[in-house]
Length: 301
Picture 1 (cartoon, rainbow, N blue to C red):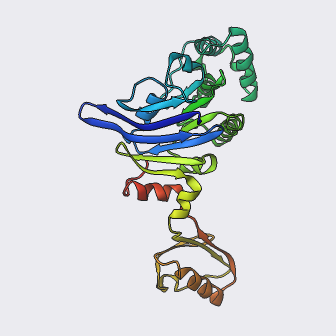
Picture 2: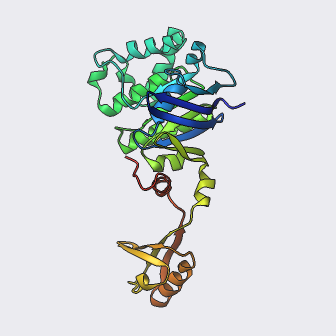
Picture 3: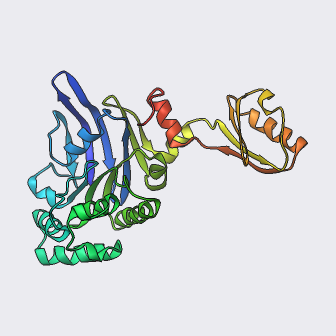
């Protein structure tokens, strides 16, 4: 029994189908990526998971059960649009939200202080939200989503507005929550974060699922079309090799795009004739490249 299962879930608004027959299973201790361009159906799916709206058909199961108000205690949500009150103190706001999730005030206060220490901002306990930078407001919103230790967590653009140091801090925190058994639905525009964090992925396009499954298996099903080449000296004639349709020079070497995998060996032979090869790597497709192919060339924006 998976912690979160969506079976043939559909949502329709008037003449518009927002989500069309989506199927998802999120395991315990898993970060599951939900991807799609704006309008693809991600937000509607997340709202149905959270019980904010009901599907018109299909079922959503939480640890094998249908949705009920009691499940709010095991659900956590970090929305893309931040919703904290700017003129209310951090402690008042977070403790109130935690109590709505069924926590005792004393326990919530203990957890809040622990998280503020972990994020190196204990002094924010009595500060108003409006007194914090955008990045630190994001940290507080993140704490609000996880303070009650949810078993099912929905993260929508969790790292937006953060500098690289704080992105790494929150990524490590998300991994920690995963390792402690949380089931996490993760939506983002940053494909590199998905590749680092997620085991399975569902790509939506215009309400329909266009690609779903294990990320490694999906990558293996797509052809390898790029070569990264670094040499000690300049190499000429790479674009004339049969099966190579594009060569992009870089400071460190060349990026080559091939239409025929047999071209890779010819590239290596030619490079070795003219120079010392420092790097030769046939690259697996990136998730961004797969996404663009899956949605018919429409970029993820």
